[in-house]
Length: 457
Ligand SMILES: *Cc1c(COP(=O)(O)O)cnc(C)c1O
Image (cartoon, rainbow, N blue to C red; front, side):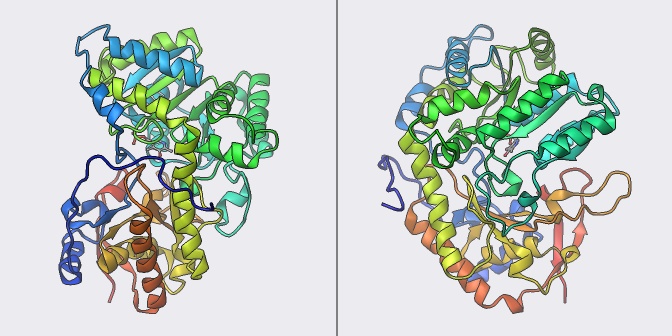
């Protein structure tokens, strides 16, 4: 079977509201052509993000009922600690309210002004925390990742030559850690090979540089290793995940993605000193090291989610759903990022709307038009998300100007994805009528969340 059917059945449903085109034209105008500013009841199929939008299982909901809400030493924290140690293998775990809480701790502790943090393409909140602490981010992903049409089994890999060149240029003492994302969200959910993780670790060990993973979608990454990398096809997802983590000194984790929960995250490390510092700082920003901004019940649901996430059938279905949507779009000639990654299908807005220059925000407009077409909410991942260079004030112009159709975990069926595909194909057929946008409001930080626009005449 090419597309795996759901390895679960539906026990509870949530009714979604339907709207007509006239209403949607009004709603998107009121939202300043920014899909982040739509109200959720205005949306039919919500592919804004896979973050925190997961459907929890009956076992996770049951776990919510055994929340131990003690201020200190909650039994749910003990379960979380055991589970993370078992599946991720790190020595220490500090819970945080979500991934960026862990990023804040890591960046605040490890970065000094003037440092450099290399990574395999940036992520919005990750880079913002690095820069806020005085570091310069350097992209050291392989060149293929910046070309939406290049097929590569591990398009998220770090270019080892670029890593070595940065070490030679600035010196190892200016690099507190390498931030290695598995998978790479902004490249299209592209995985990193085990071989590459091992090689990065070897170089970093030589220079005593830490390797910290952004482990947000590490289970999806493990699936691609099982599927594509020589010698891993007979290994379980759980054992691949554990091996991946053995080539890191720690990780930040957004539980809202691969841990199958609606809120939660954590920071892991093996280093005693780093753990001590994280335990001090977490009290300031999140709470006691035994709850880190989470309720006991949230930690319990995350423990169960971690166990469910490494089920081989679950993850196969998850990635298959994305591939189904991608294959339908490719068959109709709609330009998307290839190969399809683990959590989303990315429309290539530059190829979709070649008549709109990048400074008129083609991806932003494409996302708005997809909403008007069928009530499907997606997100821009292009020049608006990339922001401005803090020194020159100019826009960053990323090579990839994308619209992300993100598939929430265990939420939508193949029929929903048919609606999404049909809407994209319909828009593609009338693409010449779509015009660009201009800013009417632009916030300074993470502008994609709250910017407002007007269509150009
Ligand atoms: C979502 C995400 C984060 C941040 O996690 P939050 O839980 O949203 O704070 C970090 N890195 C990547 C790759 C992500 O997708």
